[in-house]
Length: 181
Ligand code: PRP
Image (cartoon, rainbow, N blue to C red; front, side, top):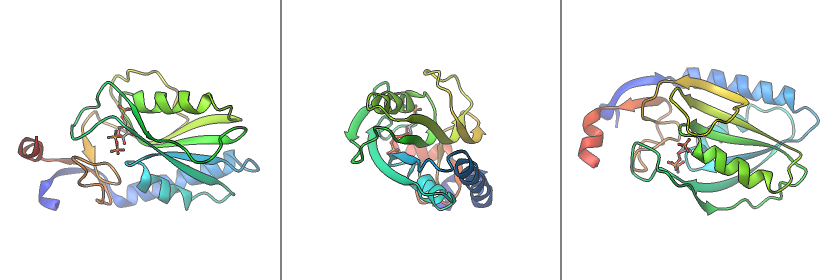
C-alpha cells in the first residue's frame, strides 16, 4: 500500500493534535447541552470515533449513509440516501461530522434532511475543507484543516473502497488511478 503513495498531506500526529483541539472546543461550546453527533458513513467513521473520545461532556452519536462518489476521484451530481438515522433529532443539539467538504452537496443534503426534523440547533464539523470552489455555499462551524484541491485518501477516505485504513491523509500516485479506472 505504501508504494501507492505520492505524498503525505497530514501526518498521524497532526491529525491527532487537531482532533484533540476540536474535541476540546466542542466540549466547551456544548457544555450542558448533550450534543448529538451525526456522522456520514463511510468516510467519516474514523474521524468520528477519534473525535468522540476527545469530547469530555456527555454526548451521543448516530449514523447515516449517503453516497456521492462511487469509484471515482470527483463527486457526482446526485446525493442518495442509503441508510437513515435511528435516533430522533427533534429538540437535539446536532453536530454533523464529515470527513471532507468538497462540492458541499453531501453536507447540504444532510443539513436539509435534519432541519426538517426540528432539531434545537445544527452545526457542522468537517475534518478536511478542500480549497476549491464549493457548489453549495455552506457555513462550516468547525474545520480541522484547509487542504489543497487534490483527491486524498486515508483516515477513512477511500479510492475504490481501499486506503481507508491508512492512519494519515495522503495523495496517491497518478498511476494508481490509471491502473484502476
Ligand atoms: C465522500 C466523502 C463526503 C462527500 C464529500 O463520500 O466521504 O461524505 O463525499 O463530497 P461533497 O462535498 O462533494 O458532497 P462518498 O460518497 O465517497 O462515500 P464514502 O464516505 O462512503 O466514501
